[in-house]
Amino acid sequence: MSLPEPSHRWIRLIEPACTSCMICARECPSWCISIDSHTEPVEGLLAGARERTRNVLERFAIDWSLCMYCGICVDECPYDALEWVSDVTQPGSSSAALVEEMVEKSTSR
Image (cartoon, rainbow, N blue to C red; front, side):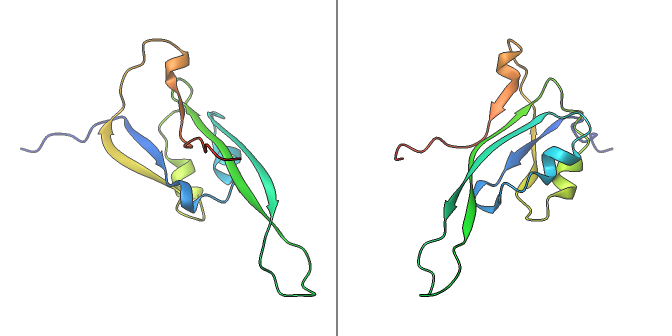
């Protein structure tokens, strides 16, 4: 007899794959995902090419007190930037502790 799978695994951001497209946040039925980003010009374009920008992720947070663990965000991300992690979600000691910031802060700006 095998043990049942843990009921509440957690979701991890694969930061280099995230393009800040916001699809995960828009598709989330409980609106538990917060994303902040800005645009920066793409450097190294050929002479005469039109200017281009890219999104730079500043903040990606999940409020575990709102998350239904449905996995819609993981399924809908077209860049595979979210994945299930098999560890069980850790309990929080306060409501603020249930908001997980998933972007590493850059020291240079």
